[in-house]
Image (cartoon, rainbow, N blue to C red):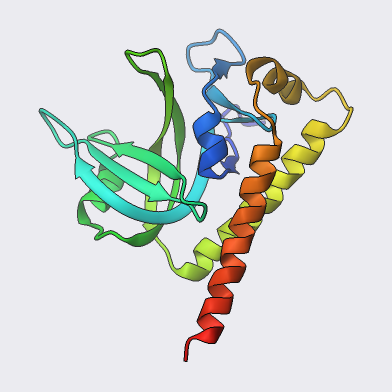
Length: 199
């Protein structure tokens, strides 16, 4: 039996829910224990997988390169990704890509408290890959399905540990995320209709 740590599943999540996931925690006191953010639909996430439109990149570093990327999902909500010297491949992608471009990102969620006491959530990318529209569309469908599954579990009466935790930590109606999922699917349908209508 190998004792090598297994990599956590990368959760698919829309930006609206991800940006609301301001509570982070560890399951143990071990220094190497993974850090999770708690999704408001009652799932923990140590890694996430997102696909969207890279709309802007900027080197916000002072002494060395530190790239910020804005990635917009189909609902117009934004993921912020930050990559510097410890994520050289991701930083190189942000430096070289010309927005707008479809990208997929696998990375770690990071929470950060502002001077005003607000909590911002961003992604520290493990990888950034240029993708096509078909890949983006498939991600939207799968992410909508996963989100709706999480909501169904959240609303069922079973005592699901992370759903309980989410109820305690967030006073956010999960209906918001159901709407995000359905709106995202509608944008795909609208795009298809527009494509068919164009000569």
